[in-house]
Length: 282
Image 1 (cartoon, rainbow, N blue to C red):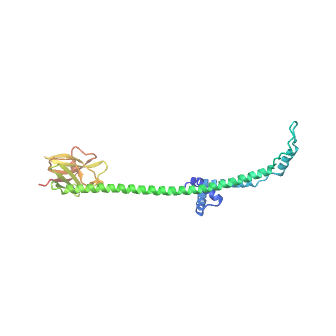
Image 2 (cartoon, rainbow, N blue to C red):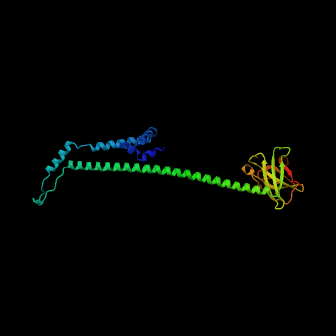
Image 3 (cartoon, rainbow, N blue to C red):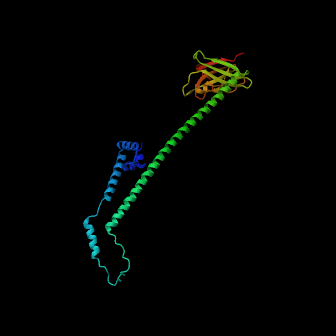
């Protein structure tokens, strides 16, 4: 924990006043052992308290009292030309300097004690309120993060479900031709499937089994039309590969093939990098 927390929270004042809880005493003593700044603050507070107590118990020296009263007694009672005070007037009460000083110190000590206790109580109350506020804030933040995570996953699952339903509708459409594309001689384990609707000219690709390419490579679909390759677009791998991916449209084709090209695709297929190929049935 940050040492500033102990210095500014009021725990030190409670500790020195002897009203800190056992848990607060343990925490503060552990912090004193761990953080020199906390130990120094406790020591400074202790010295201030000792100085305060020392000042409360200090009495003036005897010669100071004698000197003050000698000066008062030697002062002439009347100055020349000053009127004689009426003897019937009530004489003001004379309070000694020692009595005034004693009353002043007692009053100040009482006021300081009341303020100290009030400050300790307020610090203790506000510190506990602050701890409760932080706990509630942390719990709220945790719940908010969990809620956002659940909402994000829910939206992802909803989108994936909609994509799967759309894929099933395309596959089950009787107008759609299924074109299996097995692996070539160089890549016998590869497999992909094209779903082509000759009426709408829409083409969809399903990756069944293709190795993940390097970051600078990308697979590209080709339609063979009248013996010439026509670009049908590049497609993604990863999680997207498990779904139907919509490619470019074509009005007619005799077969489809997939090659591995530089990222972004090529104008002409790299024949030695042809992974799968399949003729349109019929």
